[in-house]
Length: 114
Length: 114
Figure 1 (cartoon, rainbow over the protein chains, first blue to last red):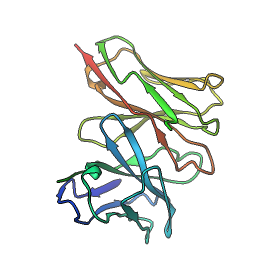
Figure 2: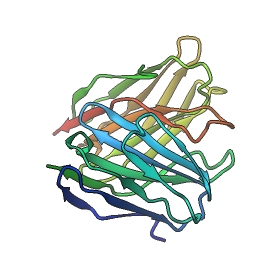
Figure 3: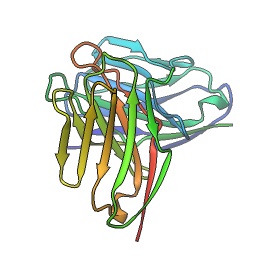
Figure 4: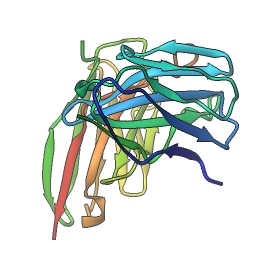
């Protein structure tokens, strides 16, 4: 059982480049989220999805796009990378229902924009 | 607007001592309060969680205390060990609708020294 898999683990981008951070989960979880983690800022929600075909914005969505064509995959796209997007990105998932409120996190993608 | 305030930012505890991390929230719609533990280079992992129908929850050496009237909750780590050295995040969300939007505190870096 792999849980939540994020790729790549590390990435360096030049300002203005675009890229997609991949996230896949094999737990049949309905809810998936993307967070960014910056020093002293905790984890901030970028986008989330409550099921295939349904996405919505979180606290810091500007500069990012998401889509959810399948239950398993939830990619995060950076449209035109900026140095302010240098961060560690975490994908997380959880199931529905009162017994499933705990999120499972991936191991993260460390992104540097130069 | 920071909806979950966490303190202290860092904490140094002697092995065998008690580590205490505090969080306060503002949104009265929050009904689920988890704590996550994160080791360097890893994603956060759910440690323990509480709902407001109880004032305390204990799992091994970890205890959450919850004060609904004060809108505060805290994590106590008894008999702290060097292996507990990590960053701890408190979080909060509603139950039911909106439960997928987890709001995190900024984190506490705990160092347990031998």
